[in-house]
Image (cartoon, rainbow, N blue to C red; front, side, top):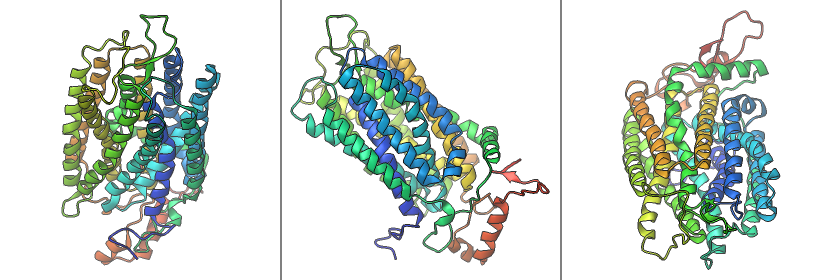
Length: 498
């Protein structure tokens, strides 16, 4: 039974499973975002180099763990995959805390590849659930729930240091109490993720199962993963994936990541480039708070029932890309005279007049850059309903996203001009916008239920409207998804001849 139009609150419902997945993302990636914006691990003179190396390593490993992690998800299942992934974030936070306390970089360096593997596991699972579990009419809301749960995690991670640092106007490292709070939240969130179930164990509100997803052998999974790289539509979307989180590196650097003033070697502490600690804390908190209602506003467009899916996607894309491009052009104008080798000795505080326009621009760049994720998830979910194929689509998205972040960390570590870094991010956004408009006009269909896809199950209410039998359709889906173990019949793996 529904309440106020909400889906049924059942453990075996796709909606509840997406909510659990969002808890995992919020308690891991949400906290990670908050830490990056605060400059965690940044209380020492060489912190910029150490943190940049750790994060660059993380993202480089993330590329491979995401691109080929669909096979891990299909073997372990969503619950175990995400639980393990979230716990690797605990290792990362602990390493930054250790570095802040001791100044020794060995533990942080070791944590980079560990969280790189874990991040791939978390986001493949979350993206798979957000794109494969919903009906076509709900794909916008599932993507919004995922991203807003991550934002909620960042809100929690942001309000903690705001409270702790409310009376501090110094540029100090992140307090010990912040690290402890984040670690506790991550451990609990990871354990909750053990409640996640495979799609064939779930039922929609109309009684239909979510998907048919039989197990495969290791070689079959790896072959399926490789074949996805031959998909021309996926390859077209790669430029749109690259800047999706690279902007986090830039925002943390220009607004608050720690760096050393190389023109004055007598300084023994690191300096935030533009804003002090409590200002960074406020910016981080307000940005993720605003992201939540903005996400629901976009969802209202992407799932608007009176429009076809193509129109919904194109209107939503336009609503995101116009302010997104405008904000990044403004960002380039703002930073055109910034000298990275000579950061200000008196970072901006929240009670100074200059803070007003910094606040507005940061909100614009942050909110609409985050909404770009919603657009990507919607486009991926609109291309196919096949759960097997979506596993690898999402994996490639998160892998390329990690590669883009790694590139930004590398460029940021050599202190390229801020205007050049912002310009590069804007360039890939513009390319991605053009690609999505092309795909939306020529490749997005109003429904993919009209042709059979591997593992996809049409909802009962759709079948009833067409005068078809639900049971027979499920049997057909199982047959399409099955693998002929005798080798007598040439089958298709994720839509490609295998």
